[in-house]
Length: 278
Image 1 (spheres, rainbow, N blue to C red):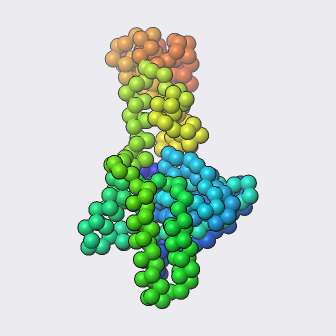
Image 2: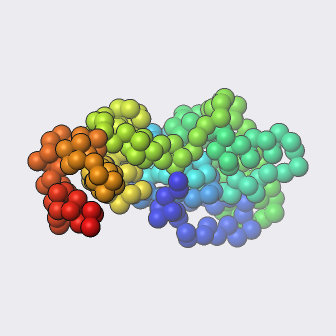
Image 3: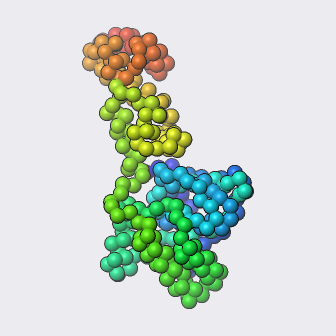
């Protein structure tokens, strides 16, 4: 399940360059970029200050000399630290680097399809040096500079796969998060508090709540309540007693169930039963 509402639709204009390299300066505690995702790859090199970054389900602070790796289709957002932040961003179409070499095909296709992941937060002097060289050469638009930059990108990818790549198949964050919704629908009679769900699926609470609302349009508790009420309607229409339906749908008491039901549907559960039986 992709966050289509968060997909960045503005195209990146590469011109004749294989990579777009841009420097940014962001004031203290200001947003560097809102939550979004795209099909290209991005590499951020912090040159001064610090930012708090979330990539997929990982939140961390990246400071001077450190690098943030954003693989294709991974959601990400960041906020500058207390002293502000300066950073370089490399943007490139990962698929454009697939050539006829079988090793390149295997590795890059696995990355694009989400079968391989790369650590989002690293500190590697070799990679930082290559990023600086790309930025320097991007000022020139000669064919020679383009070839040099392409070579640097392949070197960066090689180091990332060699030093920071997962060894096993991974599940894209969008697909992994959808398991939360599956679990809720299958376990409406259990404790589905936000704290329990975060602990069960290993998410930070603030990120979980933002992500949940982006996917569903509701808070976690609001979504659970609606799902329970919808299930209760189905049970009531099949002849189940109101108290049994309330219990099977995870409501702590009949009184609470009745208040939620009436607030949502403007009638009480017993009135609904009478209407459904006609």
